[in-house]
Image (tube, rainbow, N blue to C red; front, side, top):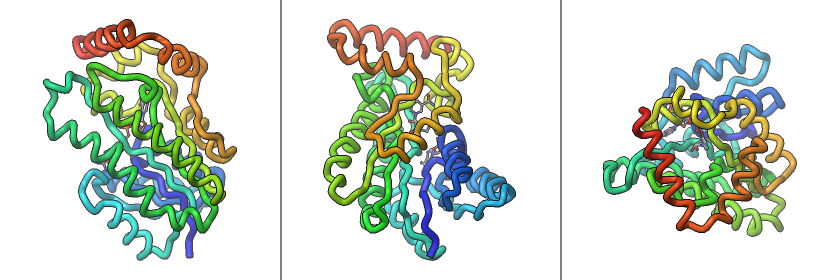
Length: 262
Ligand SMILES: NC(=O)c1ccc[n+]([C@@H]2O[C@H](COP(=O)([O-])OP(=O)(O)OC[C@H]3O[C@@H](n4cnc5c(N)ncnc54)[C@H](OP(=O)(O)O)[C@@H]3O)[C@@H](O)[C@H]2O)c1
């Protein structure tokens, strides 16, 4: 029986670097995303570095029954999950009344529903292994986000659920860590509908590798949460102290300027 760290959204961005960091630290892996070719290439690169070749599971996590199909694929490969990394996620820039309703429900399907489904499905295995869960939130989970409302709200769910789960699972010896990245140069900005170079020009961004390393080390240390980068840390302390009447118009204007620049 293989004991794996299951990483979602591993075909690019932060998830691919999480896979590289976990592999470098000797973890056997199972990788999930929609892009099979990218997952296979990453699995080949990890195998070429002398590590066990990760199990590749190519599917759309936003579809109903996806977690069940992940479990079936792992069972067929003779693998059990000790570490779960819920990283797959996306956002959309634009007003809630303007964006397509189905697209916005897709954010909830992936960022919320699939994260919850995978967590509940693999919890018995993770508990048996006294394992660990890393959920990728965002600094935006600390406040509301006019101009990207559903995405911010989805990350508030990730944060709230993870913090509660930390306490519920403590007696079982299972740790839950939330990784809260700030702006990071990945495919995220393109899928959200804004220009990567312009967006990164407006707010200095971190590298996906530095974010992945911060997440890995916090997970291994059993920390409840980690915010990579000093500016992001200060932001998460200060922003929630600002009254909504002042903060939310600023956030809306920031998102509108990103939309105009794209
Ligand atoms: N980049 C940032 O500035 C930033 C800041 C804060 C938080 N985050 C969070 O960090 C996490 C990783 O994002 P990223 O920045 O690395 O973005 P990314 O480069 O767009 O990567 C997203 C990953 O999720 C996978 N994915 C997307 N939709 C999927 C679906 N329906 N089913 C399965 N896999 C799916 C993508 O693979 P496929 O396309 O192959 O499916 C890809 O591997 C997300 O939860 C995001 O919200 C990012």
